[in-house]
Length: 228
Ligand SMILES: O=C[C@H](O)[C@H](O)[C@H](O)COP(=O)(O)O
Image (cartoon, rainbow, N blue to C red):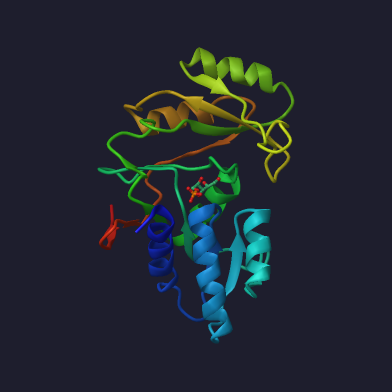
């Protein structure tokens, strides 16, 4: 199985957890896209659900797949959210998310969910968060250079990601900027999350400690289910 086959296997397993009548949070990214596609197939076969997407991209995929969309104005609790991740810490199931710039909406939807199922291929689990990827941080555009300097003073190497096609600075669905912050392997995820929460100009960050209720890891042979 190649990486896409693994992503698809985890996504299909997660989609099978969705039951009729549920309000479903739809994650963002390449793994979540396989899950949205599969849920669309189940909807075509008669599954009745409502969905809250975590990005404009996932909303477009859901509409194209025939999945009905709802909002928090109509449903304040989400039964299950299924989303990808950029890193999963093996021992704790803490996550880094947001390399696709959707972290703020993803965290709002995850926080409102009874069950938060994370779907990954075997390249995503790590011993310590920050081993392979930076922590994306969503910041308001005003003074983002000053916010970046503040993050650098905390020990991060900060990069402003740009759109591949246009070269423009990456802007989120919420009109904010993303700063990718490399801290290296993170000793204390919750302490770093609290420090990031305390910086003026930071809207949200991609550290998701103690949020996943299930992590589905697709290896070449099987889909493993990890729980905290
Ligand atoms: O902002 C993007 C999201 O957090 C994604 O869930 C994350 O980047 C994983 O994406 P993928 O499944 O494409 O690796």
